[in-house]
Length: 200
Image (cartoon, rainbow, N blue to C red; front, side, top):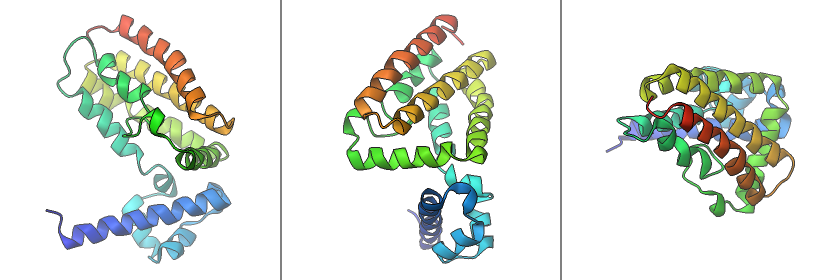
C-alpha cells in the first residue's frame, strides 16, 4: 500500500510535470526557465531539480518507463525471437509501448500529441536529447535481448518509428494514415530484423 508521503511525492512530481508541459507547449522549450516551471507548480527550483534533474528530463519524463516496459517484455523471452516479442509494442499503438491502440485514439489525444511533437521538433535541444535517449536504450536492450548488434538495429527501428509518427502528426495526418505508414515501413524493418536475428 502506498503511504501518504509517497502519494504526496507522486502528486508533486505530476504537478511539476503537468505545469512544465503546458509552459513548453505555450512558449517553446528554450523559452521556459526552471524558475518559471517552479513558480507555475508552486514549488522551489531546488524541488524541480530534485525530482527531474534537468529541464530536458521534464519533457521526456515518460521515457524511462517506456524503456523499462520494453526491457521487461524481453525478460525470459522465448523463440521465435526478441523482435517478435517487441513487435506489438512497436506497431500496435501511437505511443511506443503505450496502453492505447491506434483505433482508440480520439481527436483530443491526437491533437495533444501533435502539439507535443511540434514542441519537440522546434527545439534543437530536444531533438538532440531524443536521439541520445534512444541511443542510451541500446545497452539495456542488448542485455535483455541477448545481442548488442540486435539492440543497435532495434534502436534504429525505434528512431524510424519516432520519425514517421512525428512527421504524420506535424503534417496533420489522421491516426489511420499514420498507422498505415508505421505498419508498412516499420513492419518491413522489423521483418528484416527478424530474418537477421532469429535467435539473439
